[in-house]
Amino acid sequence: MPKVTIELPKLHSGRNNSGGQIAVARNPARFKVIVCGRRWGKTTLGVHQSLDTGLRGGRVWWVAPTYKVAFVGWRMLKRLANRIPGAEIREGDRWVALPGGGEVWIKSADDPDSLRGEGLDGVVLDEVAQIKQAAWTEALSPALTDKKGWAIFIGTPKGKNWLYRLWQIAEKQPDWARWQKPTIDNPYIDVKEIERARRESTSINIFRQEYEADFGASQLQVYPDFDPVFHKWKWKIPQFKAFVGGLDFGGTSVGSHKSAGIFGGVTEADFLVELYEFEQSGSRVAEHQLNWMAECEARAKVLQRSLNHRPANNYHWYADRSQSGFIGVVAASGYSITPSLGGRNSVNSGVALVQGRLQVRGDGFSRIYYAPELTAFPAAMERYRYPEFTEEEVLEKPLQPNPLKVQDDMADGIRYQVEGLDAMVVGDPQELYKNLLPAVI
Image (cartoon, rainbow, N blue to C red; front, side, top):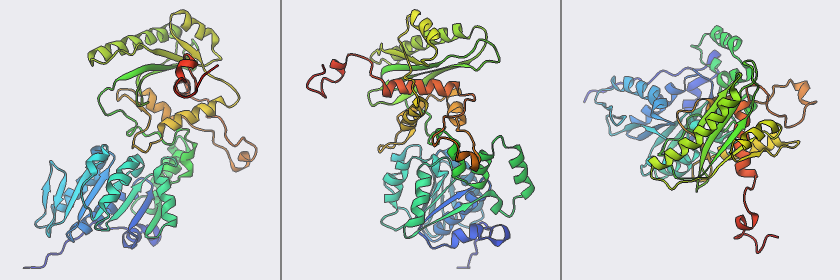
C-alpha cells in the first residue's frame, strides 16, 4: 500500500518566535487552557490537534456553546478533510470519519445531557466561557477517563467565571498548562490593524479583554457572569407561580434618561424568566409606561390560558423608592407596587442579588433567563459597568464603587425586580414561616 502524506494546518510560532501555536501543540500537558485574543488562531490550533488525534485512530469532539459558534471550526475541518484520501464527511451529523478508524465530531453544549455516554480520546472546548460548566464536569470530563484523553479549553475572557477558575487550576495542578495569548502574538496580523482597533474602541478595557486576553479588564463589568447565549431561554414556556416587574422612572423630555421596565414570571423551581421589557423617554412616557404595565399583566393571563396552565393571578411591581410620586400614581392606578429597600449600600446589595441569580448552580442552570425576543435586557446587562480608575485614584476611592450612572435605567429596573423577589417578604409572616418556626409573634 503506497504511503500517504497528510499535511495538517500550519501552526505559527508567535510574533518574534515567541512560541505561538507551536508551543501549545508541543506541550505534553494533558489539559491545556488557552486564553486568547480575537484572531490569535484558536480555531486552527483546535482543528490541528483534533485531526492529529483522529488520524491516529482516536475519537475527538469539538464542543462549542451552539452549532452557530461551532460553524467556523466545522468549515475548516471539512476543508481539510476533503484533502485526506479516504476521509468521509457526514454533513448532517457534523462529523468526519478518517482513515484508520478515527473520528472528529462537532457538538453543541446547549444541552449538556446530549454529551454523555461516549468514550473520547480528546475534546476541544471552544469559547469555553459560554459553555455551561456542567457540560465539562458531568459529561465531557468523565468521557475522557477510560482512555485518559486530553482536553483543550479555548476562549476569550468574560469576567471571572469558570474559565477563570480553570485558568487558576492550570497554574497549580500537575498535567495542566496554561497560556495567555493576545491577538498581537499572531504574526500574520498587521500590528497597524491592532492599533486601529485600540483607537476606535469605545473602552480601553473592552479592547484589553478582546485583543489582549486580559481577565482584569473584564472586571469593570458589573455582571461578568451574564452571557447573552447561555442566559437566553431556550425551552418551552414553563408554569409560573407569580409574575414580578421592576420599574425605573425617567424624565419627560426627549433628552432625559429613559423610563424602563422589566416583567417576568417565576416558576416553582425559582427560575425567573424575563418576558417583556419597556425602555422609552418623552413627554408622555409615564402614560406609556402605565399602558405597558397593563399590557404585561394582560399578556401574562393570555399566555397562561393558551398553554392551559394554572392561572397565577399574582402580579407585583417594585420601583425606585426615591420616586414616591410615580409610585403613588402606579398604586392609584390599581397596581400592586412596593418601593425598593434603599439605604447606603442598596445598589451593591441589589447587584449581588442579581449576580447570584446569574451564576450557574450545581444543576447546570442559573436562576434568571430572558425571552429570545428581548433586546434591551441583554444590552443593559452587558453595558452596566463600574467606573474606570487610574492607579492613583484607586487608593482614594471606595473598595466597592457603585456602577456608572450611564444608560443604567433598565439595569436599575432589573435590580429593583430581583431585590423585591429575593430580599423582601410580601405576605403574612405567620403563613410564610409556619413550617420553619413554632410561632411568629
